[in-house]
Amino acid sequence: MKWINHQIVTGFIVCTATDDALFTASAIVGAVLPDRVEGSPPKESSAYWKWRKKHRTWSHYPPIYLALIAAAQFAKEYYPEPTLAFALNLITYALVGALLHIAEDGICGKVPIFTPHGKHGIKLFKVGSWREYFFAALIILICLFVRFGDLNLLGSYLGL
Ligand SMILES: [Zn+2]
Image (cartoon, rainbow, N blue to C red; front, top):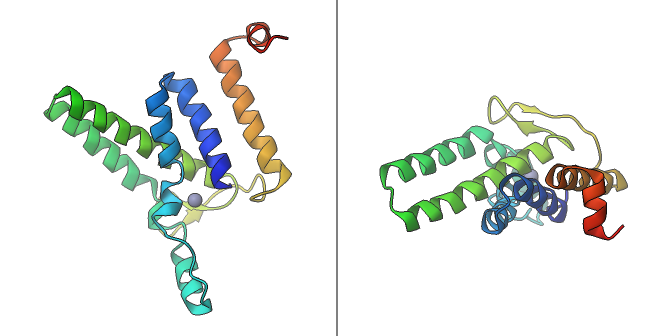
């Protein structure tokens, strides 16, 4: 999935779930985190294949992000200071964004689930294809439907 679609789909899902602009913004930042930590692919051929071999391994391994979320939540419980708790919530939603990125990659390719190198996934569409945009639009519609309850209410918001 393209970065822009990762950000849009993740943003809509988190906004629908939390109804919070800052948590949504955090999740949008986190939505490209697993790719960003890999760095950009090197131009030189042998370096590229070395990079490619590591692509979508540790950076896309959900237990790492789940452990970091657990650590952030634990720290929040342990140090119940409001500013720190707020910052830890923002970090948590950035990590949730990263987990959604991995799930989104898992439907257009393969990602590690059980071990960092054993990749699984279902390929519903090719990255950058019209199907990807269709899928993103579908998720947005589902989020709007969930958010606004029924289509009549949604229609009245849209002026239809
Ligand atoms: Zn990715």
